[in-house]
Figure 1 (tube, rainbow, N blue to C red):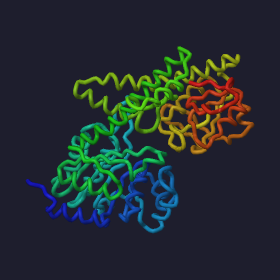
Figure 2 (figure 1 turned 30 degrees about the horizontal axis):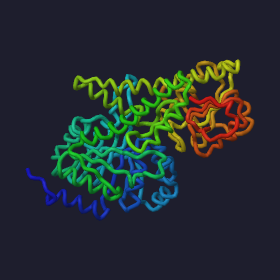
Figure 3 (figure 1 turned 90 degrees about the vertical axis):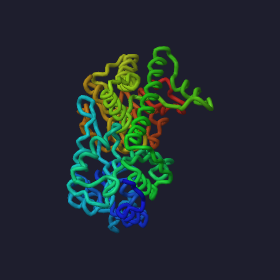
Figure 4 (figure 1 turned 30 degrees about the vertical axis):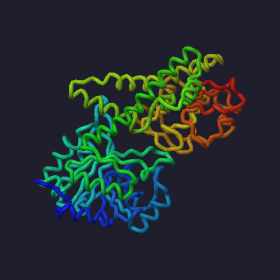
Length: 446
């Protein structure tokens, strides 16, 4: 069948999108879903957020923000005006013209993809799928998910994709905490099940995003996202391996990276650290390696990168052992203050944070731990970490009383010169003390 814009179902949906009367439903109100819902509501779309967590739903309806990339006043205004509403009632999906899936895609204990959240969302949609809806998946996943998993579930509704309803994949690409590149000015990759699906999905995203990039299929869009994050993981692993080598050779890896960055071509600077965190870099490459095994292909290079990025957390702990040993002190019983537990600077996200791994390892060795993070008031057990504690104030007493201060996450609001001045010993994992003039004898860098 020839599918054109003139098809009445497609034309009606296109009109609703163009005049911003389409009811937008967002499934999952976390780090991806809530910012997306706010962006759509800001330009006039009525937005209904769906989540299984009643606490999140209540917070959204009260206009109480819990995501760093959302402005408090914007969410409050939208909630008060009715531009955004949230619910746990999935029956209301039937009223939505646009349904966007933004649920988590974690790994199982065996490091295989856990697609249960996406499957559950698709099943809820399939129960209420009607003519004239478009469904888009934004959750990062392996190539083939939309066509092999989501599409068959939606087909249970008995509707024809591309004529009666529309399906596309468009990965979230926002960098949390990045003030320069936000949802609006970060290009959006879109792959549709059919040409009409692609056309409508691109139109939808062009309402709030400056540059939309269509690709040939959902699988191409899925591969684009996992390639982007695998690229970062591999390059971080490369510079982390350089760090391990430079440590043995007595060379400052930070000096090497900065010097190499002066070359105007042929190099893109990545920096070493205590490991990789967040939902993307530690997880997405495993989605790709898992899928590759179905094609009898072993992604050795990518898996090696994952091993190196895991190894550096153990290297950092060993560095702390050595730093204390040079002062004739033991890790067991040593008071340690960790500065920053978020996975990157100036955000509140602790998912897969290397800080949690490092603190868990030090706890097992008998260290007496405390931490300060202005963005993370409390740590709960997460992943393989059993650490549970509250952030302490960054006082002179707290710094002086620690036998070792660990700069794990280099939040911009901390005066590292003051920290070095008051501390007995500082292990700097982020080169945060680069411009500190005094106290160099107290600083150990990874």
